[in-house]
Image (cartoon, rainbow, N blue to C red; front, side):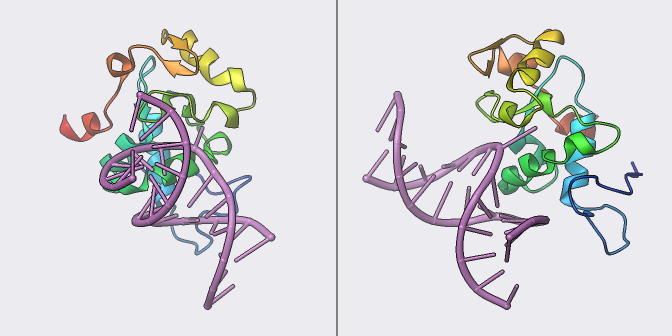
Length: 129
DNA sequence: CTCCTGACTCAGC
DNA sequence: GGCTGAGCCAGGA
């Protein structure tokens, strides 16, 4: 999956070195895009699937530019390990995240995903096959 | 180059 | 059982 994202809008060029965007960020973006509709996952799960379970923060950080990448990354499907919409505050509007989730059939209550493990999607699924 | 911050997570108290 | 501190990597000032 080669990223064709050549220019990152808000973020400074992820890799001004001229190399492909083989950063951790892009890996996160790719995985995030693979999240099936109506499913959610956690930052740690994504990080773990990338081999950097300790870098859960980086996953969230990467999401910072999710809205500027193309195709867009469904960051709203990514929540913390508690299923809490930790990143909702970073969306265009605080309600955008849960609104999108509800729209996909995921129930959100008190900024938390109900039946989180039921809607949980493990990134490893792509690798396991 | 050094220091701080950040959409997380775990361990300790 | 909730709060705090520390670890994690990367980027901005």
